[in-house]
Amino acid sequence: EWFAAASRGDSAMIDRHVSTDPRSRLVGSDATEWLQGGDSIASFLRGEVAGAGGAVKFAPSDVEGYSHGEVGWAATRLTITLPDGHQVQPRWTAVMVRDADAWKIVQTHASIAVGNEEAGWGYE
Image (cartoon, rainbow, N blue to C red; front, side):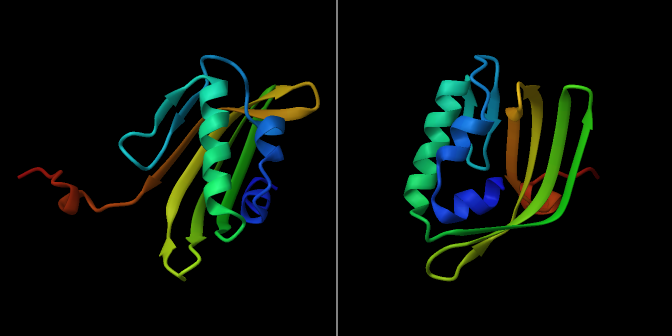
């Protein structure tokens, strides 16, 4: 539901599924994307959806989701297709808590896989 709504440019899912808890955290794929607080995260995500304008397609694969009581977590591999056809394939994870009748994201992380050698991380 989350990625289908993002593909449509529907930001209403942000208000339904992002926690307003000030301890919530978003870690994005860009070095500057380190946000804390539900309001900051929701504002950032609304900007992302608006910027995509319904022209960017988010296709999850290898989706996993689990829950234990009032806590849940999910992971997926995404293929994001930009309007010019260019594709990016980040990994995405989230931790959620049950709040009334909805799951609310309290922590989410997206990363673009780069090999350890390419990142300069290695042992001799």
